[in-house]
Length: 186
Image 1: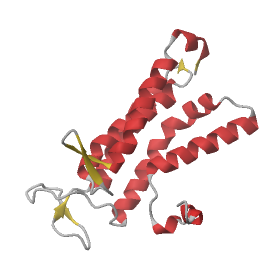
Image 2: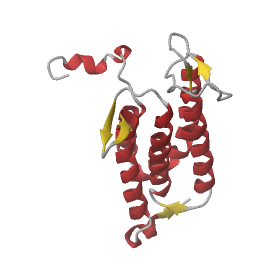
Image 3: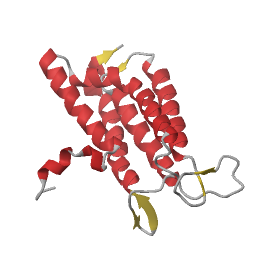
Image 4: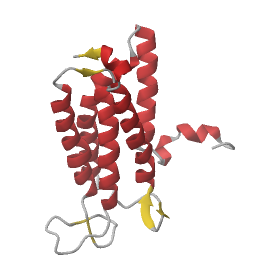
């Protein structure tokens, strides 16, 4: 991108990922919160429980469009699918991600956010849960790229999920620290 910076904005050439969109939404939230005089952490806590529903809808769209085929599946797996232009039965990875990264994370977030929590606890939990869920469901996707760390395969989605997991843990610790307990809100 250094030699052709305009390509950054050419999203029709691919390269879009949830993780990049997540950073973009955080920037938009920060700008909105600053303009409106709102606390960014409160805005994140408010928005976080709703994000998995949008994510689930996006993955349903991926499935309907036959995008993001899964890894090869055992032919005896009852829900293994054939994808257009891809050889062999596959895991329906968009459905796995819709169910785990979307619906399961939404249910946990909804149950957690129903009670007053310290500032940033809800947003932190979303960051942690999404990172963990995505790390898991990546095992069923055909990766954009894959490498090995300590002899174990790791995909680009897993690499990008690790900072979310670490950040979620740190933010949850901070949210529940004594210094932040004064900021409990509904």
